[in-house]
Length: 207
Image 1 (spheres, rainbow, N blue to C red):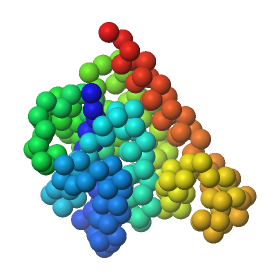
Image 2 (cartoon, rainbow, N blue to C red):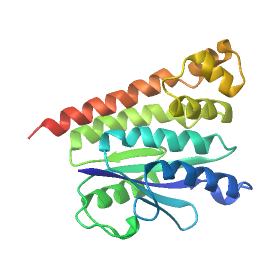
Image 3 (tube, helix red, strand yellow):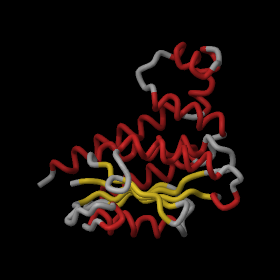
Image 4 (cartoon, rainbow, N blue to C red):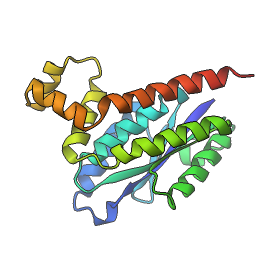
């Protein structure tokens, strides 16, 4: 069992900062392996990434979303497929298996949806529950300001740092850290991510 993320950059063609977002995206994707086996950027603003531990997929999505949203006027549309990879290839875009089919089909649905994150797994009840939660989470995630997105990206990069140290990194006061944490709904987003991990673990135990 593995997971595959398919995504594209929203408003990329209107952006005057292509180099900035492309370097940011590459930097984040590099955290999960090397291109083109583990990830690949294609058609200019689309990408595919394998997350070998499906339980880590939503965290990867949040990291990518926050880093790109920290660049003015940009967002990311992302689907997560969970399933089996039956054919390995030197390029991820040439690999095969139901995990790729699910990721691709979910991504196509996103193109006509107000939602920007969607999950497709072998379990319909799990999908219904998580996609409902993600739809609600996207109300916040897709309205992050550049400041909020940058804050979330920093918190996700340094999850164990005390608030005072986060403040030093961002050059803001500890009270400002608390304010930004609340404004970005960091704790609620993390609760959703933890719920995903829990639900996936419990679902995978069912024979």
